Each structure stands twice: as structure tokens, then as C-alpha cells.
Amino acid sequence: MALEMRERCERCETAELPPHAPARICSYECTFCVPCTEAMRGICPNCGGELVPRPRRV
Image 1 (cartoon, rainbow, N blue to C red):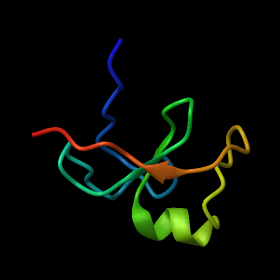
Image 2: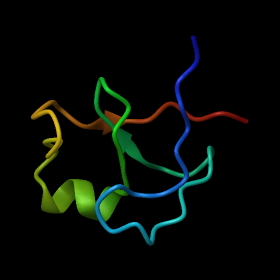
Image 3: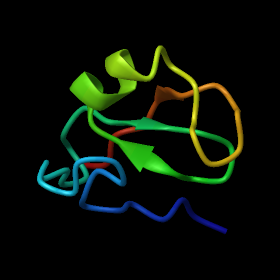
Image 4: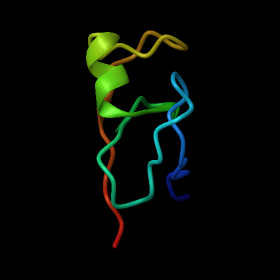
């Protein structure tokens, strides 16, 4: 099972997040841009989990 590489930030919905872009995800694959992650202090607003760097694909 592969990660779902979502292409939009779930908070601001304006950030483009192609697979090679820096993004943050939680264990449920909620996806956020770096500025939104920093504003949320690295905590997912959906599940309360930690947001970590999303693996990149080439």
C-alpha cells in the first residue's frame, strides 16, 4: 500500500504540493504545506498526531 500523495494543503488549500515538494503528513496522511504546519505547531488538527516530513517521490 502506497502513501496517497495529496497535491493540496488541507488547511489553506492554495499551496501546490506535487510529489517532489516539501510537505508534512500525519499517520492518517493528512497533508499540509510547511507554513501551515509551522502555524499549527506541527500538530494535525484532524487527529492530533505529529506532522512529519512527507517522503518524496522522483
